[in-house]
Length: 303
Image (tube, rainbow, N blue to C red; front, side):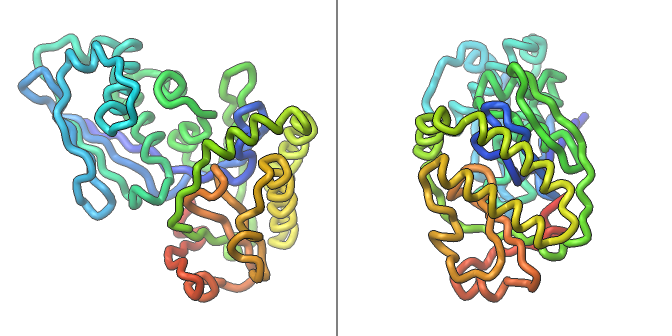
């Protein structure tokens, strides 16, 4: 018998970094995600195969039950990371390893792995579904992070997400503006050391922290109630200015697209994978002329 589980990808629209410290963030689940299938396997092992969007295998290995039970590795290899997740899952629900047969598990992404839409969060949520355990707890004990990505994995509508005394507050919110045809997503195809930005955030947050959290909460509310693309773009512009000052980092628009006539907003970790673009006319040619060819409309990206 084959069991199949699915989780949505994610994009964080407001609240990056500050969501770690209680700001109310606005996030959107994507039409892209990850599947996990589980079948019985004769040996007391898990035969694991992970497929990318193009059906190529990007990870394949077999792990024994004993390796999962005793896993203590802290290195960053794919196998060690998988063992860490499965070990934490075992600590919560040991029954899945207390049997005479094992498992054959396949994961399949519906987006290219380098897009950064939640390869890890969708995996953690799928494992949590399979083993009937709390995905937020599994994330906390394995990867860490705010958990907004787990909330997106579990919801099929726009959400707000906030941490209060370590607990996740997730609310499904309406976001069906008449200007979604003015919202686009562009893949930057570059990685930036987000740890550096997080360190800078931690260093600077005490300077403006409480006022920044309040400001971002207000901007999240304003984004959800904007009545036209001009208002929405203005909210994103203000958000970028606040985070630029807090992180002591130039905005992505200042760095790469200073001549662009619309508004560009970093999503999630600054300098990361996708940016959101708000423009009254389709700007695909503009980005293609600068070498950015992965361009999606709102309806193509957002669930």
